[in-house]
Amino acid sequence: MRRTALLGCMILAVGCGPAQDQDAPAAEMSQAEAPTANVLEAFAGTWSMQALTEAGDSVLVDYEMVATASTDGWTVTFPDREPLPAHIVEAAGDSVVIHVGPYASALRDDVQVSTVTVSRVMGDKMMGYFTATYETEAGEDILNGLQQGDRIR
Image 1 (cartoon, rainbow, N blue to C red):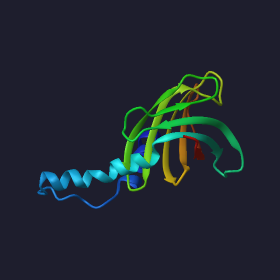
Image 2: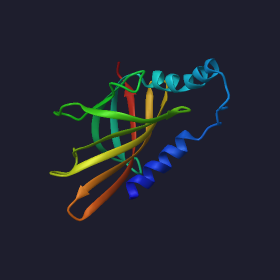
Image 3: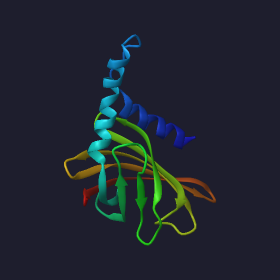
C-alpha cells in the first residue's frame, strides 16, 4: 500500500502541469505532446550512476543506466550483472519517473527489491531521488536516497 501511495505522489509531483484543452485540434495536441519527447531526448545516452544515502554522504552502489529518446530500451546494469529493464512511468517538465524491478538486490543478499526514481538532467549530469522497496520476511522495508551520475556516451 505504501508503495502505491508513494508512486502516486511521485507521479503527481512530476505530472502536474497545465491542463490541455479537450477541444484542441489534432495538430495542436501533437505539439502539446512534444515536451515529453524533449524530456526523453535530454536523458538519452549512457550514464555512470551512483545511489547514495539520503544524506548524500555515502555511496551505496554504482551502476550504469542506458536511456533512450523514447520510453523503450532503458536499462540499469549493476556490476557483474545482466541489464535490467527500466520502465518510464512518467516524463513531464524536466523530470522522468523510472521503475525497475522487482530484481535481486545489489545491496541485500537473497532479497527482492523494486525501485522508483525521479530524475532530472542538467547538461551531462543526472540527479534525483529514489525509493527502494525491499520484500523481506517481515514485510516491506523502504530505503530512500539520492542518485547522481555523469553521461559517459
